Length: 309
Image (cartoon, rainbow, N blue to C red; front, side):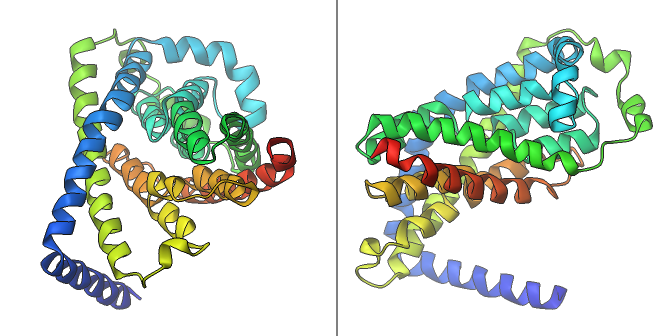
């Protein structure tokens, strides 16, 4: 099996290299567009939330939140109250703020490893700005944007409830990570800014490379593919923004857009892996959680599409 994976990877890399040689101008143009998107959208929208995420954890706010919300979060989602911070920031900050907050909570000992891994399954979500602004405009219906956000939040919470079946972490695991030095550390604003800036640029790297890959992929598709009903789904499976922009107005587009928002796209998943680097956290519940989020989003969107159109 490992040999087969290596062969497939080699073939993909060879195809990518050949495409770069055949279409250098298109690849360079896509990279420029990706960098422009980073400077005009990704950096301004994510950076403040990354800093806020770091400060919430390092200042001890997560500990206070845990004491307050554990009676609510643990019965519903099987995590301590500190996990509410990752859920809230993920719902307002967009991808991958929730995942990074969960990782920060785990690093500082506010949640156990099993709790952090469960949080990854439902706390990394699209932000309201993207859903209301981009999706609402594409669907040519601002009410559709509002309903999409409600569907997105509701399906994320439902996914969290369903992931509750994952066994809770052992008490020993929590004691090993909850230490006074970690829980009581004062806020370090310069460190939060420095680390958040580096993390955002790591995310931007994936935005740029996926912009290039998608441009080369579209060049390889047959003529007229952009008019095919599967085209937005293909783009959105790989990269959320391009997929959402290709959706057509109407009920079908509304349901598809909801599913794409729940899934997030391979680009978002790569960004999530980058913010988890060095934590030791597994994504065993992240990918099932995103697939579940997409399915629940499509079902809820289908159920309420009649109230939008």
